[in-house]
Structure formats: structure tokens, C-alpha cells
Amino acid sequence: MNPYVLMILLSSLGLGTTLTFASSHWLLAWMGLEINTLAITPLMAQHHHPRAVEATTKYFLTQATAAAMILFASTTNAWMTGEGNITDLSDPLANTMFMTALALKIGLAPMHFWMPEVMQGLDLLTGLILSTWQKLAPFALIIQTAQNIDPLLLTLLGVTSTLVGGWGGLNQTQLRKILAYSSIAHMGWMIIVIQYAPQLTLIALGTYIVMTSAAFLTLKMSLTTKLSTLATTWSKDPILTATTALVLLSLGGLPPLTGFMPKWLILQELTKQDLPIIATIMALAALISLYFYLRLCYAMTLTISPNTTNSTTPWRTQTTQTSMPLALFTMATLGLLPMTPTILMLAT
Image (cartoon, rainbow, N blue to C red):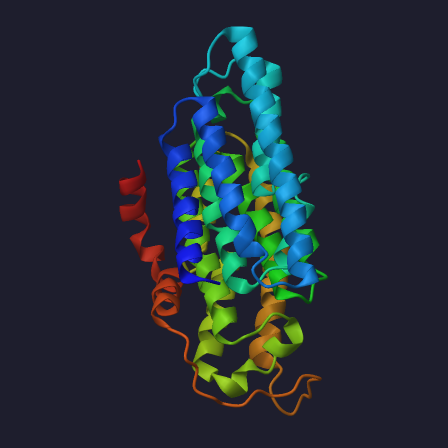
């Protein structure tokens, strides 16, 4: 892609998100979301491949539907209450419609069906943007309106997403689909606690972005998109293989890695709010997700010789890719747990 065009598209992505962050009125927030969608569409279709075009079309249709629902919800709210402010969302119908639209935007279950299919059709860098940057603007709106939304709806969306994210990833062999289901499960953790402690949602979103970036950049470095090729990466880069296994375990939420921090704090908050059953369901759903991360770790690090794989073992060629972002994200993914009190203090 032409670097000038790429610069304009990435600037538009930044502009759309910033516009939504800064807006206090519905129309401006909606415009920000639309700019975001229109900016990422050419990035998704840049490889002129039928799968990429199909993924772009699916993404565009779901995002356009969600945007139309947001516009309809805000118009309904303005009609009923005379208010156009984001924080004055007091009409129950507009509330529910708005939350449903944002759930469709970020891929919360049961509005998640587009997410794995779209991710599978994209290259790893665009998939990284889709699963990290594109979540920021909708989350800014959800955090602003969470206090007005029905708590039962938020709890149902959160629990369903963690369960679907766990179950959906179990049978997958394509790594991009596994990361899509991982994203759905993490979104569920963020939504479940948003009504009680929005700062924990921000912490969970931050750690999710760091861990997912590390996972995507690792896969890009080793040029891997499916489970069978993952099993041969140890011969090419043994150190990267070891850190990748730890990154995956961090995504699964094992201590003493960074991924344990948001899960620990969210379970603690749910227990404080006298919701032990919900906390138990969430912890068990995390175990289901952990299984497919362990499966990836097993394929990477424990299926070494004398086991045979169907994939060709790659040559140990020098890569020309820059490794600094990967190193920084991997360090943050593995070592931020001791910083929990500091992060909590900064967030509150």
C-alpha cells in the first residue's frame, strides 16, 4: 500500500477514536465510530484476496448495522427526553438498544458471530488493530453510560461472552480464530465488572491490549497462522518459542504473569458486591479458555522430536522484521503483576 495512503488511513483511525473519546453528544460520538470503520475498511481489503474482501464486507455490514442502531437509539432518547448528551441516556428502550449496538461493535456474545470469521480473513497486523484499537472507542461510550444500563443485561452479556469465548476456541486449529475467541472472553470479563468498578474495566482493557499485541506480534515474527506450523517454530527460534508459551499462559490468566492481575481484581470485586455465584461461573469459564491456551503451549513446546509433524520445518533464516515492539510488549505481558498496587492507585 502507498505510504501516503497508509498514513491518511492510520491518522483517520486515530481521529475517529479521539473524536469519540472527546465527544459529549451522541452525534459526534457516532461520527467518530463511523470514521473509525471507514478508515479500517481499506486496510482490511489491502491484500486483494477473496477471503480478505469477504472479511471486509462482513465487518462493514455489522459495523454499519451497529452504527444505525446507535443513531436510532440516540434519536429515540432525544425524542423521549429532549436530551442529546451521552450521560443523559434515561429512556429504557434507548438504553437497551444502545448497549446491544455497542455489544455488536466490539463482538460481545451473543452478537459475536462476525468476529472469528472476520479475523480469519485478515493479515496479522490488521487483525491486531481490529482486536485492540477498534475496541477503544466503543468502550469509552460503554463506560460513560454503564450506570444507566440495566445491570442484568450487562451481567448476561459478560457471563455469555466468557463462556462462548471459552467454548468456541476449544475446537479451533486456526490461530487467528483462537485469538478472536480469546478476545470475546476478555470482553466478557471487562463488561461484567463495568457497573461496579469502571477503573477495573480500564485495567483489564489495558492488560488485554498489551497481551494481545504480544501474541499477534509473536505470530507475525514467526510467520505462523495455524496450529500445525506453530509446532515447528521451535527449530527456527527456540527463545521466541519459550516466551510465546509464557505469553499464551499470561493470556489464560496464570500467576505470576500479568494476565492474572485483571482476573484476580475482578473476582475480588464481584465477591465484594456479594455475587459469589457469578464470580464462580467466571472463574470456571476462565479454566475453559486456559485449556486451549495450554493446547497451543503443548503444540509449541512439548511436541518436539521424536514426534513427527505434517508441516515442513522452516529454515533458520535471519528475519528483517523489527523486534523492539515485540520485546516491549512481551516484557509487559510477563512482568507487570508485581506492579498491581501502583496500577490500582493510578487507575482510581
